[in-house]
Amino acid sequence: MIPRYTRPEMASIWEPQTRFKIWFEIEAHAANALAELGTIPKEAAKTIWAKAKNATFDVARIDEIERETKHDVIAFLTHLAEIVGPEARFVHQGMTSSDVLDTCFNVQLTRAADLLIADVDKVLAALKKRAFEHKMTPTIGRSHGIHAEPVTFGLKLAFAYAEFTRARERLVAARKEVATCAISGAVGTFAQIDPRVEAHVARAMGLAPEPISTQVIPRDRHAMYFATLGVIASSVERLSIEIRHLQRTEVLEAEEFFSEGQKGSSAMPHKRNPVLSENLTGLSRMVRAYAMPAMENVALWHERDISHSSAERMIGPDATVTLDFALMRLAGLIEKLLIYPANMQKNLDRLGGLVHSQRLLIALTQKGASREDAYKYVQRNAMPVWRGEGDFQTLLKKDPDVKKHLSDAEIEEQFDLGYHFKHVDTIFKRVFGES
Image (cartoon, helix red, strand yellow):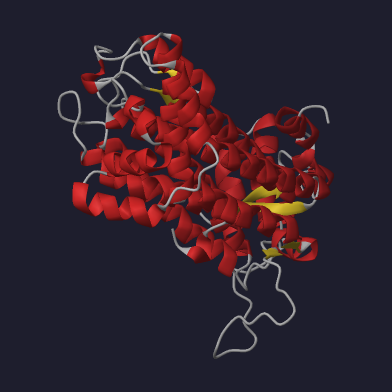
């Protein structure tokens, strides 16, 4: 985790103290279940909770023990015994390290997902507000970066809203996918521990029992989770790139907010750069990169190995922390985005009406021209305008082949900008509902 791109609430999920607290809760809940089953004394379970429930675990002490034992869970259990006393011998009975590690990891991932879902909600709120604000603001749609046909800026933002609505749904599904608990012992057979212990711990930790584990929770769950984060990051980048293109000097239809005292360049005082959206592009690349080791972690040897462990120690915190920061930055960017309708209109008019070429094509075919001929008539009048050699509507009115089919009034009718927006309400209702 890099402090520059880290928000405190997400970071706290991955702090050692939080991890050891979750480890303790897993062990203590398991002890409660074992006590109810008569496997260990009930007083022992009560003592475990009483001695350590409010304890602050000594991270340095655990690290010291681990340097000797070369085993993180054993180091923790040794330190826990120093806090609990003799009753600590009843801790971890019939369990294996992965029971603690995997269940804890899934608790952390579900908590992280809850924060990410809240982040997406903030992005959605910002997009909805600005989309309705510019629902009917005309702008040019682009295909291959080239002027195509008119759209509205509200539709651009509505498209992003729909995309992040899907992102939220995927994130909810990913949270459910990874919210499982395994307390099944070595190689997952429950030979040394009753399955009812797992069910009890799962309920207590807000998880579902893993239907079948080996010695680890199957990593296809985690692959799906991190892949989902990668897809969301791609949506962040798509919107960021749109903003970057719209801020180009030659376009300048939208622009990142530039605060008082902000500097764009150490050399050129005039610069106002899209630094936030460029930053989001870079962060998105990193989140996607974390998905690959998660997929490679699926293929473990036999009932378990630990080739996944080192990767997860990095990708767990790094992917969630980075996406959390990126989503909040994106929400703020959209909230403060400067939008320039006058420049949008100027760019719309830049090609002298060529953006209405399809309407002319259709109108000619409806009046009897073949599609091939209609395309030829429209294109031969469009190309001079493309080169800056005339006005599209004027040229069309002078073309004898066009005039065989369309009157001047009918030609003029095809240049109505509002025609392109007749279904904006329908699209908005599809995206936002009836609100």
